[in-house]
Length: 338
Image (cartoon, rainbow, N blue to C red; front, side, top):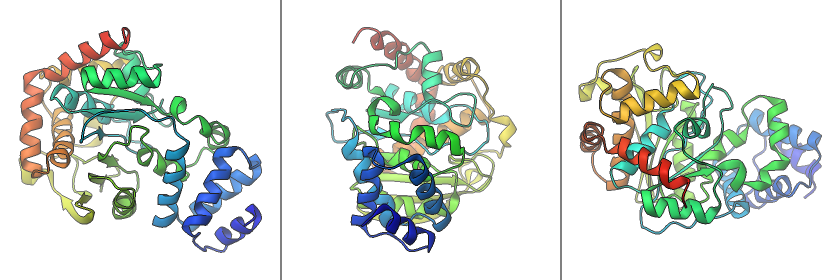
């Protein structure tokens, strides 16, 4: 099928078959399309709405093109979300990942520099003194030694170089915003994925099931936060044993007070590093800590196949213990020695 024929299908709001979607992504990753063709295809896909089958096929091709990271163990966690919610919140997903590493979990944190906020996961880690420009072997070693490794997307998805300039110039959300959390190069099989679009929660859980994920929570706050929100209800889809279930999460039912987005704001990488260190030391109380405990609790619930309440209780204990702060110190040191 020619690229023009694929574009015609998309413009007419017709879903692609799995084979057609794989063909299309293969051409994008291979640099076989002109910038105009790629732009048109991305816009047509968004206008139509990407199907579950298309997203699954796209993710498979991107995974095949990625540089793999070898990690031993049955449970490998990723907390990477889509970003792009415009909330300006502190770097929650990375702080969760560091806390989990302090608790003895293995975390392969997929991430990038900021696209829409002042500070992305890569920016935060650098502000914390962590070296992120590591080889795949060095990342694997760091995970084995500390329980945490950062999978810097531009370095491990080299084929994306054909698409990055186009995404930057378009400056709108495209299918690649959804694909980031679905294409972990370490094959993370336990995930908590925050989405910018609450209408996609169930769909992304189905994609994870098709990709063979062990367990996951896909979440989107009703207030627009791409995390489990502290500001109100959160749309949740849980993947367990290959099946998905959807429900609403109410933080007040677990004893948390509601808080507005202005109470979980972050800032520059330096500001966010200070917030992360304060949280992981167990010294911070209030909405920022509550947000960390809830989201880390969801990740623990997925990893241990336990209830959300039990997961949150373990997360609270980890925060109080200061083990997350010790993990940061160890990760910082070893990232320069591996």
